Each structure stands twice: as C-alpha cells, then as structure tokens.
Length: 489
Image: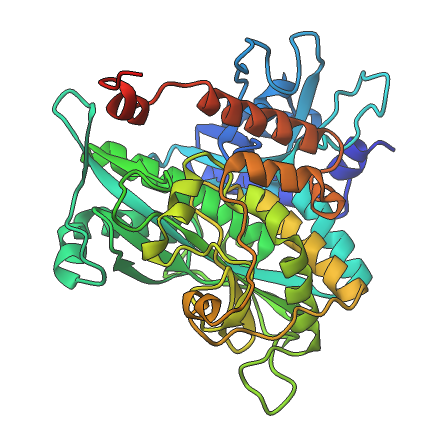
C-alpha cells in the first residue's frame, strides 16, 4: 500500500471517524476547516461542509503543492517551491485533532496529513515531504524507536497587542505601557487575555500562568507542556485564537519579533526534556462534554525524565541531558535559521541590552547564554522567537539530540558567569549568526539539521527564506532615507 493508503487504513482510524461524526451531530457542526501548516508556520487548507466528513476522511481533498509555501511568489515572480505545472497534494484528515471553534460553534477544525497525488509517476501517494507537521510526526516516531525517548516541550510565546486607528490601520503603538510584570498593565488587557484563555480552554489548553512583559502591549500566556507534536498544534492554534480575539477587540495580535526598538522583543523560549514511559490523560478542563476529541484535551503524564540530575550536582542534567545539550550546542548556528527565521528576528539579537541570547554557550539559570538549564530536568533554548515554525523546530531539535546521544557529544563546562563579564575576563565565546543570511549559510553547511527537513521541505525553506533575505538586501528602507537622503558625496 502507499503511504496514503496506510494512513487511511491505520488501525483504529475508522472508529475515530465515527466518533467525530457523533461529535458533529452532538455539537451541531455545519462546517469544518481542514488545515495544515506551511513552511513559515501559517495555517492553510480548505473549508468543507460537515455533511462530507466521511467522504473527506476516505478520499481527502486536493490543493496545490505550493500551498505549503503560502502560495507566494519570489522576487522574480516565480511561485516558491512548485510551479503551476505541479500536481496537487492530497490532504487526509487526522480525526483525533477535531475540535469545535469556540467563537463560532457551528464551525470546527481538524488537522490533516499531506500526501503526494495518487496519480504521480514517482512515489504516488507518498508522504509529502514539504508537510512540516507530517515530517515532525515521522521524525518523533523514528527518534523514539531508536532511543526509546519522547520529547516533551513547553513554549513561552510572547506577543504584543497593538492598537488600530478608526479606519483599521495600525497606529504603531502597543495597547499598554512597557512595564514588566506590573499587574496594573496586565489588568489593562484583562478583557483581551481572559477571552484568549476562554477560547484556549475550549480548545484543550491547560493554561497555567501569564504576565505582562516589558514591551508595549506585550503579554505572555503559558500552557502545560506536552508531547512535541501536540504542543506544536497548540502553538499554531494559539496564534489563530489571538487573531480572532484581535478581530473582536479591534486590535492587532502581533507575533512579529521586534516591532519596537529600545524595548524587549517577542521571544518564544522552548523548554525541553526527554522522557521514557508515561501515559496520556484526558483533562476535561471543566467541560461536562468535550467540544472535541479526547486527543485534543490529552496531556502525557508520568514516566521518567532522563534530563534529571544523576549526581550530587543538582545544577547538572543527567548523562542523556548532557549529550543532548552537546548536540544542540554543536548545531546552534544552523538551528538559529529555524528559531530566528525572519530578517526582523535579528533586531532582537542585535539589541543586546535586553538579554538577547546571542552567545553559543550554556549554563544553569544563565540568561546570557543561548541555552540554559532553566530548572532541574529541563533546558531552555532561548534563541527562538514568536515567528518560528514549531514543527520545524521540534524536528530539528530531535535531530540535534540524536546526534548528541549517538555520538556522545560533550557540551563542555557550563558557564555560571554573566557571559559579557566572562568575555572581559578573556573567555572566547562564539556568537550565533547575527543575520538571516548568515544563519541560512550555516544551515546550508549542516546536513544533520537539514535532515529535519527532508527532500522538498529543505528546498522550499531555503528558497523561501533566501528570497526573503534577498528582498531585504534589495530594499530601500526608512533607515536608508534617514541616513543618506541629505548627505552629499
């Protein structure tokens, strides 16, 4: 059988399809968004009436391959990734991800896995390698089969709520003042974040904490860590939720990394640990009847955290954790292209007065390093911002871990000093790439991280991001005008 046929006929799927039909009838769903994730993390797909649920689950729907690259043109007016002569992908629903949209309860969403067209001459019905969500699932399964470990991830997505003019255009200002952790400023956005939390809980988020950060209108809301794929799904869903709340409050939900200079950027610190064992447990979050499938409301609990200290030094991870850190440290330059994936991302890294994680070093609770052990049993990758694609990041980290564990990579000694002071004392510390172009060059030299984006995925990512870099290099900006307009030679 083809990959597509295996997916449709996998054990237990027919039962899940029937369970979704029961949910459709119970919740009175009329319409369903069938969605997947593009190379930049955008949510794309099709809407189909719920009457066609079973047929879509069996046959799928077709959409142009270029949708995986947002169906955007490069600066030479060529479609990125695939031309108009390319076949169409087939999207097959994953019924376990079905969930009602709380802002319009007649509508639901479901994630899909993408496959090559059934009539392709080469690898018909094969996994579409430009499907980043499908790739993460495959890579996570391969990693677990090889090492026996499950990657659990918790993300800290910062974003800013910006104001609009009466005509809908942006004012260029954040809603609140840039006072970090001030409850008064948090309170000023209470109607907004309470609506976000209401929608999030309705879509399976176990919200655990939140605060006002130190940029105008900047909030961070956190949910419980979980399996890497489910957490990526929740981060994508969180962005959709914020976009909807922004429409309701006439605001802009801004995930751009650095819209304002002189204040903090929007990072998305990624906390990681590798586990053995554990079981999924449904968290009803107060619902008597779930507005979605059990999987959407499930979190993995229990098991053994392999990153926990195994010596008297509670600041050092266990052997598996150290090897994993070694793998990440080795591949930090290439990983920067994934975690800091836009031209604007590097405004954050250049503005070093705001704890910018620009140094390729690691330490315990040391925020001046690109990687830190944030607590016993987990470590935090800091050079990630809120524009990143969590599916690509998850897959890339798994490949870095695999390299570190397989090849017993030593991360070196942790740095406990402020990295800036350590440099003054004579320590030679490498910086991370400080431009998108430099990061893409480091990724082009790193076959391990490239393997997280197999075949067509890397081709599309490089094409898309290199075009973005070239567009920037070829653009006249306000800085150019301010600096050179009145200058005579």
